[in-house]
Length: 403
Image (cartoon, rainbow, N blue to C red; front, side):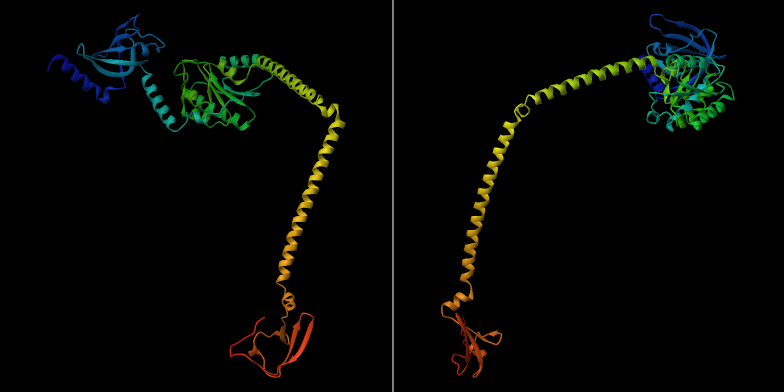
């Protein structure tokens, strides 16, 4: 085994050890260096007995609010890996927080993950903001600068909009309960179109009320759309994630809540002009169509057109009459043929040829066997009926005479 193979083997051991990934490490910064060209940060962390090398690459370092300094006690989040080329390990840092905040961040991350799993941040649940809000509910401190900014922008954009202020503390131990109560009160009132929940930024400790589970739940369960305006653009709280819309500042929240009246008036004017233009085009097209119709011969020489229609109607009547006559003639011929065929089948035609129909009472005699000597019978001829008496019979036992 050579040196490179050894270092590579050790690097793999570090890589597959889950404990060495995404952990928090406490220590004092020493030997801090920031390279301007690359933007990477290099330093070491030490406690009273040991020291470890750390590096924070530019992609993570540019998100820092403050540049660390030697002697600062911090919590860093990162992972450990071996720099195989030099055969030494170091901590690859992704986040740096002053000591005391690391535990809070871990708790917030756990709460964030749990609430996300319960659907509190799902985009599908978020409600659309109304386009023309006429009454705005504001949940904030009545003495804070955030409220003044919101009111100023609302008045500038739409002096006619109504505002309901639900006072609440925005930091401190009482703030979460007061925020929940204020949001519930506006929902119970039900006569507001949008609720703005906000304050004017601050440190992580100042914003903790907006990271509380009860405030997140109150925003999530609000029947009225909620705009979260907590802090400045770099401050993102759990309330921001749960709200239907997030504003980077209270000023932006007011801009999102109501449209600018002067712009609406300008848009309305443009729409009116557009509508007038379209109506003029429509009327011009209809006038042109009417002119074409009036140039039609029907309007210039109606008598000629009416006579043409009358002539055509007369032709139709003559054709119909001829068709009906031909139809009746064909049907009469068919009827005559049918009558002749029926007449040939008539019993009277049979009698005319010299045959007779013998009957005894109401029954027609079809066989000699039906009669006895002395029976009275009738013979129906073509021109009358004969009354006969049977004086004798001739014929076999089974013989019959049939007409």
